[in-house]
View 1 (cartoon, rainbow, N blue to C red):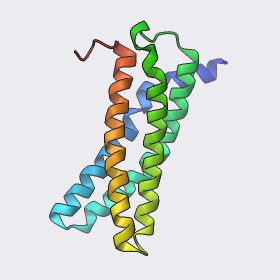
View 2 (cartoon, one colour):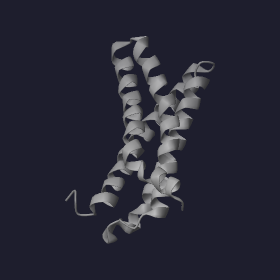
View 3 (spheres, rainbow, N blue to C red):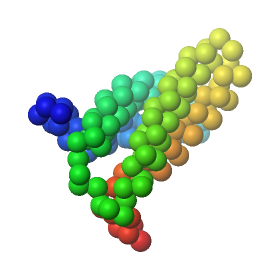
View 4 (tube, rainbow, N blue to C red):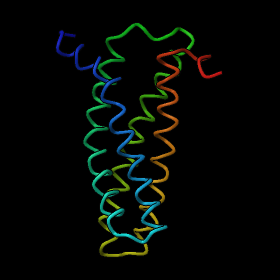
Length: 145
């Protein structure tokens, strides 16, 4: 791979934290919307969720390039790479599903609002698991023990 591709891959550790924060802020804002009943928090969640889709896409592209160009993965963690890759894609897909359900809930409020909450919650859990596996890929399997 050319130097531009390698540079793009090496950007993964730097860019991956932005979509994680956006997604977790969307979850937090929706929780605050539920508790405080302020529409501001719902709109903030919608904005964070939409931005996270874009940022996750860039992060996933960089991550897949990094995986193809690096040999720095600790030997005891190499088996985690496929899990990290595909769970990262699952985060993006559940994020997109939550965003779609959010917009569909404007027309069929009850049915799609429940699906939105389920996908948003699932996305939050998946991003935590995926990030944990990413940490193990960088620092080794025993780092968190």
